Length: 262
Length: 262
Image (cartoon, rainbow over all chains, first blue to last red; front, side, top):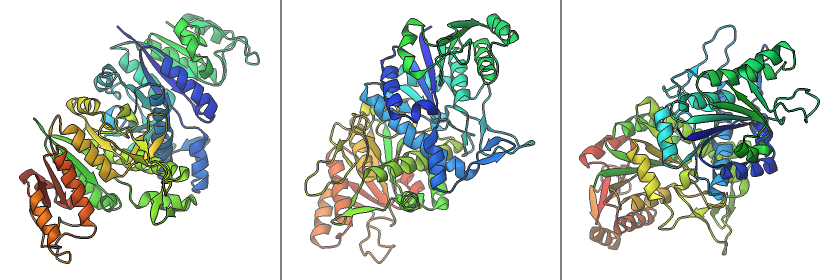
C-alpha cells in the first residue's frame, strides 16, 4: 500500500498570510499522495459582520442558518479554497479544490433537529466519502483540497466541521492507502504541561492514552481531539499526528508534533 | 470521435432561480460528454454594492480591481458554482466545479496594461487549456462546471470572460472530441428581424454569414458573437449553436436556436 497524508489546517494558519504561505510551500514539498482539508477562519466572520449576518448561537452552540451558509460557501469554497489552490499551483503542486458536492465526493446528512436546530450542518457516516472517485483523482496525480462544505445529494450544500471531514477521508482511504492523518493546531503537539511548549509528548499509544487520561495529564479540550484521533486509528488509519503547521517538514522524519498510534 | 457539448450560460439564466432549475434539469438529461461554463449575473453586482465595492469603469470598460476579484471569486467560484454542482448532483449528473486554477486546467495571462489597465483580467491563448487533464476527468465520468475564474500559474487568480472560456475549452477539446459549442443567451437564436422572435435563422454557414453581414441583416452586438463563433469553427469546433436556455432539449434533434457550421 502507498502512503497517503491527509492534512487539516484551521483558522490559525489561514488567517495569517505569512503562515499560510510557508505552510503551502511545505505542503507542496511533501512527497507522495496527499489531501488538504481547511477550515475557515476570521475572513468568514468578518464578511458576515460586514453583511450584517450576525453569528447565531443557541445554548452556546453555533447555528448555520441559510445566510451563514451563503457566507461560508462564498468564503470557504470560493475565496479561501481557490486562493490556496492557485498558491499550490505556483509551487508546482497540482491541487484541485473540491467541496463534498463536487464529484459527489462527500455526501452528508443534515443534522436532525432535536433540542437544537443546528441549521445547515451536515453529519457524516461511514459511507459518506466516495473513496473510489477520490482515489481516481489521486492516481491522476491531483492533490485534492477540501473546504468544510459538503452536500446532501438532494441539491442542498451543508457546512461540515473540517476535523470531521479530514477524519472521514482518512478512514475511507485507509482501505486503499496507508494513511497518516495530520492535524495542525496552535500548539507544537500534545503537551505534558500545558504551560510549557517544550513539553511535547513525542508519541502516545492507545493504551498510553488511557494512562495519561487516568493520571489527569491529558484533560480539557485535548480529550475529545485525542478521542477522535484514536477512533480514526481504530477504524483503519495508520497513525495520527497533532502539531504546529510551521513544523510540517518534520513529518518526513516522523518527528512532527505528537504521533498517535494503535 | 465521441461527441462533446460545451455549453455556456450567462446571467439571464443564473439570476432567475426557476430558469436555472429547468436549465440544469435539461442539462443533466443531455446525453454524452458535456462541459458547462457559467457567467456571473446580478448576485456579484449586488454583493459588491452591499460591500461598498463600486464597479470601476475606465473609458466605458469594466475594470477588475483586487476588491472586485475577491467578490467574483466568492460569488462565481463559491456561491454560484457550488450551488449549480449540488443541483446537478440532485439530478444524478456527476458534476465537478472547477476554476482554471484547479488541476491547472486554464492558465491565463494578466492582460497587459496599455491605454487601459483592466486589472485582474486573464486573457487566453491556444495553449491555455490543459486538454489532457480535462479529458481524463471527462473519461472518469465527471461533468466539469467552470465559473469565469482562471489563474496565471504564479498564484494569482484572474477573471476571464465566460464566452472566451467556453470557446477555448471547445477548441482545445476539438482535438479529442467532435465538439458542439452552445451559447445560451436571451433570444431564441440569430433573428432575421431583431423585433421578431419568430424569425430565428435555423442555420448559417460561414459563407452565408458573409452574405448576411453584407446585406446588413446581421449587425450590432451579434456581429462579434458570430465572428467569434466562426473563429472557433475555423479552429476545429464542429458546430456552434446560439439560442435560449429553455429550449436546450431541442439540441438532441439539432433544432436548438441557430446552428453555425463551416
